[in-house]
Amino acid sequence: MILVDIYDMASWWTLVIALQVIVISTYFFWSKKKSKQYDPLCNGKAVEWNPIPIVEHDVTIEEPPLMGKIDDNVLNVGSSSFLCLDKEEYIIDGALKALDKYGVGSCGPRGFYGTIDVHLDLEERLAKFLEVEETCVYSYGFSTIASAIPSYAKKKDIIFADECVWFAIQKGIDASRSTVRYFKHNNMDDLEEMLAEAQRKRELNPRRRAFLIAEAIYFNTGEVCPLKRFVQLARKYKLRIILDESLSIGVVGKHGRGLTELLDVPRDEIDLIVGSLEHSFATIGGFCAGTHFMVEHQRLSGLGYCFSASLPPMLTQAAISALDIIESKPVILEELSEISKKLNSALSRLKHFTFRGDEISPVKHIYLKKDDLTDRLKHSYLRNITNYCMEKGVAMTVAAYLRDVEVNCPEPSIRLTSSRKLTDDTISLICSLLDEAYEKVGPKPELQPV
Ligand SMILES: *[C@@H]1O[C@H](CO)[C@@H](O)[C@H](O)[C@H]1NC(C)=O
Image (cartoon, rainbow, N blue to C red):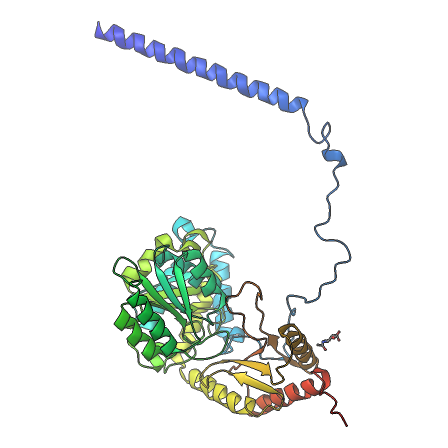
């Protein structure tokens, strides 16, 4: 009896499946026939379709976005390869070997078949170098901090950030949708006032995470963060610190471990350190460093980490090789810091310009002394000055900002970088050339009424 029932059931299911097969195949048959009848290329309008150019023919480009390739015989003081590792044979050879072994790309994000042994090596090496528990490597410097911030800070949280933070941090803060307060640049009194007021208004409370965000060396001003005060305030008001050490790791400190090493601030006082591989390390990418607890969180919630293809293996290898060099020859860091200091004393003697940037900072900003001009005009003069210098064999760059999008758009400046290749002679050449360019293409002095 039961057997018969099962048999009946089986045949019933066979019938259902057979019917489904018939329906599906009829559908495909008809849809194929239909698509044969209607060919958009012949019957439709596609044949007559003429693509419209994306831009009109005679667009004049006021400001070409890139300078193009810079010759080797030009002295480049716009590039942020401070340690000049970009021409190092050892790094190039290593990268080429990695290219032979792994091919160009990594084929996927880290969590989706894009993790290759060199990535794990680099993360381990960076963690050892910085003396932290763990690091994670991103494939693009900008997206490192822009992803790291929103992976911790959420809508209900509050962020206190320096008003001069660079664009990637601003974007990270935007993406977090947290409440944000910008304090005056490097002004710890202003920050403390702001924190005290927030506490009075009960904006700082245990139900809400609060963050302090700053750069160790500010990309937009070349100035160094007063990290000790910063850490004290964070401890007093129970804030978490996210510190962007992009311009200080591989630059300052006895071993190049950044501002924390230079100022002797224990690394575990900083909740998350973010660094870049695009300056001293002369490759591409960025990393986050901290405790296992902090870093691991990003492997699932750092958007740039989860959803971007991982760093190409050859560029990862280049970062490992750069670390080899920095670890084995820390003397190059001393050379760099000597040159940064010398650059400061030379720049302070400029006739027509003022500048900003701490002695230890490899980035300096040069401003026109004449300040009764609009920003647009200043920018135009500075660009003409850099063009003049370029013709004379020194490549510099005018700092580029998205004027209407920046939180606090900085004054137009020439962003000059120090690097190991500069000598006393080249430094004085740069300075005299800047003044010469000003006299040739800069603003003309007003005629004095007689
Ligand atoms: C910069 O140079 C261009 C081209 O020579 C010139 O048209 C422009 O007026 C100059 N800018 C200023 C502010 O003098």
